[in-house]
Length: 198
Image (cartoon, rainbow, N blue to C red; front, side, top):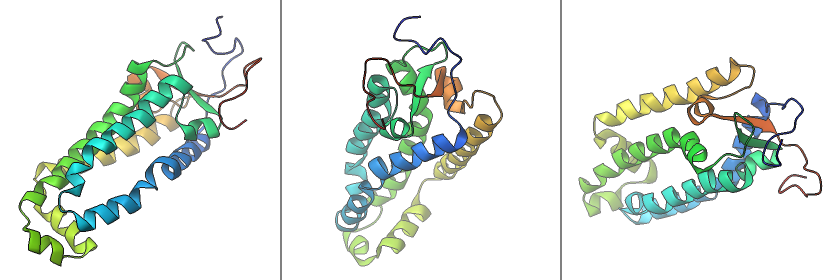
């Protein structure tokens, strides 16, 4: 078996808690630092949520597609000693990495667009007069009707990910089946230092 494939031994699949831990680490690295910026920008600039869509999309694709393709996982997965591989054991490519992330990305994008659309209906004085919570409530109220459908699909997606992962031996989530991937415990490679997490 070539160096690009998993060990000849039976692969050990990353479990629920290991993957949940990876999600937590990724949130701390990728999501949490953006929250203060979003709150600050959103409270000062009316169209900040709209202007930030592009940079956030680029960052998300870099983090969840580029890093997965080049390192076998996001930083959170690597810290938790987990690695994303194709089901045949080979390294995941751009197609697989993108397919894994695409449903989540599209749902986020649709929800963000839906909540940015009401900004065009709010006057500048009204925007400045509202507090953070009041402004968010107004955006939800003025969002297009299809936003509710997106929210429902987001919830279905999130819960189905957990259900599917817990009901198969390889602990593959729904996005793993879509992309033809599996998450395995990262094994040290002979003659090389591990990228992150020892």
